[in-house]
Image (cartoon, rainbow, N blue to C red; front, top):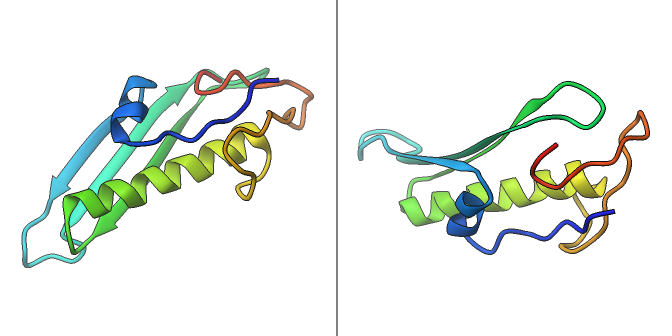
Length: 106
């Protein structure tokens, strides 16, 4: 089965098909900066879904990007590797119906 490798940065996630939305809500709001990464995936032996991660920060947009990327990588390890605690590069585990995933497609 395919190995799950973390995205190194936001640019790599965008190259992988994720859309990025970055919001600066202004200095009077907390959190000020919001980064949202999202991609529609087709499903493996079942219906498709939306894979999304959001990061927030009061410090900077770059900090919100880092939080969103870390959340996305943890979700990808969980979806494709079977556990959010697995390390980058671990293989895929079948879903509850025995279907495998194609990383970032299903």
